[in-house]
Amino acid sequence: MTLLCCSGRRSEDKLKATEGRTLDTNKVLQKERAIQSAFQDQTPLVNHHHENGNFEIRRREKPRAQRPLTRYLPVRNAEFDLRQHIESAGHQIELCVHIHLTATSCHGYLHKLGGAWKTWKKRWFVFDRIQKALLYYSDKGETKLKGGVNFQAIEDVYVDHQHSVKSPCPQSTFCVKTYDRIYYLMAPTPEAMRIWVDVIFSGAEGYRDFLGEAE
Image 1 (cartoon, rainbow, N blue to C red):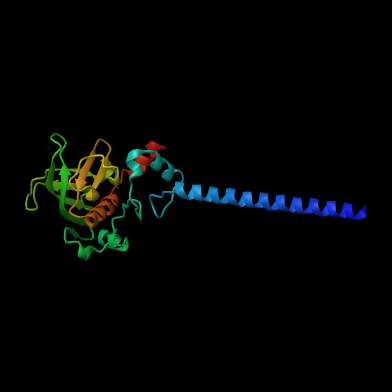
Image 2: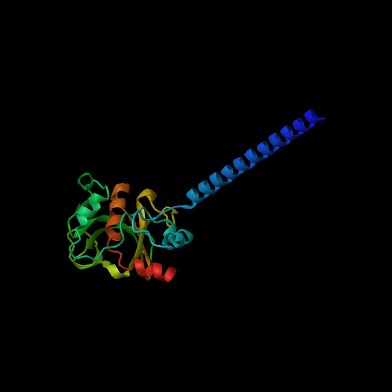
């Protein structure tokens, strides 16, 4: 009789231990799934200066979901060195012959999608931190301004990953969003595009206002 009781207790203890291990395993699996899910949901748009709510808002909306990785927020400091900023972002400027970059400006050819006829036209673009404007001309030697936009009107700059427009070179196409329109631009190479995106975003003074409206 005593042996049967002891045997019964041992069986119960083994069953409880097995159930306990099963529960622990289930908890571990649940935690792993939660971590994986959270990791998949995290698509940070800016490496630094994380601001509460900005990333979630930007993932929900189509244009901002295309935002590239950008190291800094727009800078208004008059002593800001544009060339040093771009080099510190990892761009090899000396290897990109399509762009001329100084401490205060960036020059180069880009193709711009026309608003009326939807054709791509080659234009000479000038990003000027002194004038605080992104300007473009019909050609490098032209002095008559074709068009442009002030820094305060630039709300966002992002790669056109979703191919929202038909482009002969989708991997080099990006967008400059202003308060009243979107400029579709195409760089000569993907690397030139990445440099232009970081350059123009450094002057996107309407970016914070854009986030404020989204909130």
